[in-house]
Length: 69
Image (cartoon, rainbow, N blue to C red; front, top):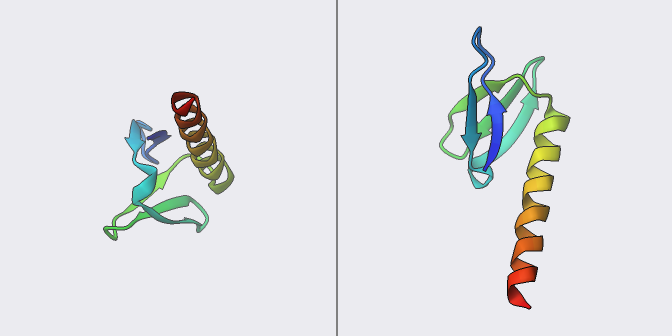
């Protein structure tokens, strides 16, 4: 899961399962659309969300390779 922040006055953090992400749009705010159809506006940019997803996936793969040894 990755930590993002809701685009609101309080900018509450939440954790999102990256496997639930269908797409990420910038219009002009960043919106994450889930496979359920729900859209969440976040404070992070599209590039930041993609980087967090990539970093998370690399970490998961690295951990699985260490366990396989």
